[in-house]
Amino acid sequence: MFKKITENQSYSILFVACVISRIATSIYYIEDIDSLRFYLSLDDYNLSRLQPHFPGYPVFCFIATLLFLIIDSKGATFSLIGAVSVFVIIYYILKISKIKINNRVGIFCSFLIFFNPLIWLMSNRYMPDLMGFALAIVCLYYLTERRNRTKNLICGFIIIGLLSGVRLSYIPLIIIPFINHLIFHKQRVYLFISFIIGLLIWFLPLILITGYEDLYILANKQFIGHFTDFGGTFITENNLYIRFVSFLKSIWADGLGGYWPGRAWQTMILSISYIYFIYFGIRGIKNHLKNDENLVIIIYCVVLYMLWVFFFQNIVYKSRHIMPILILIFILVTIGQKYFSDSKQIFFNISSLLFFVALITITSNLVIQHKNPTAISKLKDSLLYEHYGITIISTPLINYYLKRHGVKGDFISVEDNEQIITFNSSGKDLALLIGSFENLFNNNYRVNYDSTYFHNPYVNRMWSAIETFKLEKK
Image 1 (cartoon, rainbow, N blue to C red):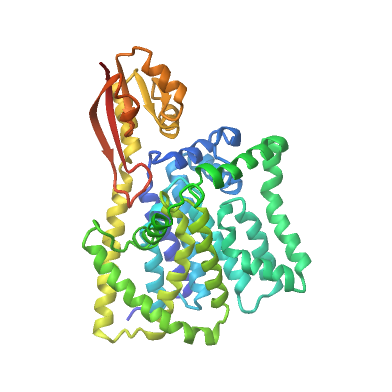
Image 2 (image 1 turned 45 degrees about the horizontal axis):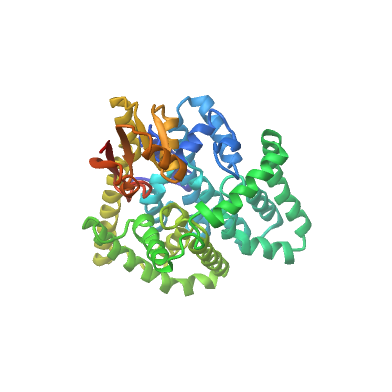
């Protein structure tokens, strides 16, 4: 018989698996406008040029730049950060759930997170979200751990400061225990100082790099823009029904790989299994709370974050914002396994087998598709290959993406009325229109369908289908 491996050995195997799997599935193209900004930041970190945009994500960009200098591959750099983040997420979810990795429930939980489709895709994406997710879970653990030793809390408060420099929008997730300790803990002064230290580690260098006045202007512009213009909040995307449906879809279909109209039949199997496991998780909460009442705080934290995301994040077009909500689902499923599962039950074993076969199949398909270029990247390749030297008309973000990839042409924004009027009266014989804006040119040009570029929206919702048209002078 084989000797049971220790916890340390199990975590070592998990870490190696995370690194190998994520490096193997690295992507070597820029899949969207957000990824482009972080890609460019490795060569030229400049907030005024939106490389990246405010708040600058300086901790993430600093670590990514150091790794890039060592391994000289941007795709591998972001995947390595993603791999470590996945490991940290699994490690601390197990600690929060009071479960060891080297038993059946620990292995179940590890597989559940390791093969989660959204987490895997984000681990290869050129973005800081997964690293922020990992740090947020670490903060939750140290701030809600039952013993609440001052040493752990100081560590947690320093990490909160660092989290602000990785993914500022995740701060609402930990705001409840953060404020609670600052008000009621005897060592609140030391905790506050710890938070300030974590904050100053990245904020002072950011001021030196950007300049105080420029940083203030950029912060003010981004803050106002996020909430009133381009941030996708309920102020600009104010159809609450669409927001609610998108919110559910982001969690269930994108976040967990569950069924949604139009998806493959495997997602139905996964959905039924998830419902079965979550049901037992809800039943198991009462037993779990007997040993760990701090789960209630985590539930409050996730509920508050859900409200923050629903009203103040772009959930209509970007499902990645819901990742921290998955914490509660992972914990629920794990608790259900801990208190109600029975490895001797045939139905349970069949359900678990079908669940993981479906999960691995769905995630593998998405990851393989992620290796192929997205719609905007295919369009860029087409323009570079065919050497379009003509007028290109599209949205500012698409124009920016194409220009930064070296596409040559006379770019016109569909949002600039003066440019559109000038073009319509210019007498140019031919132009390429990207996007369905035919109504702007019908009076002066014939609009002929050219091509459609697309990718699976469950890989990336942004620009999943792009139509192009040729404008010919009447």
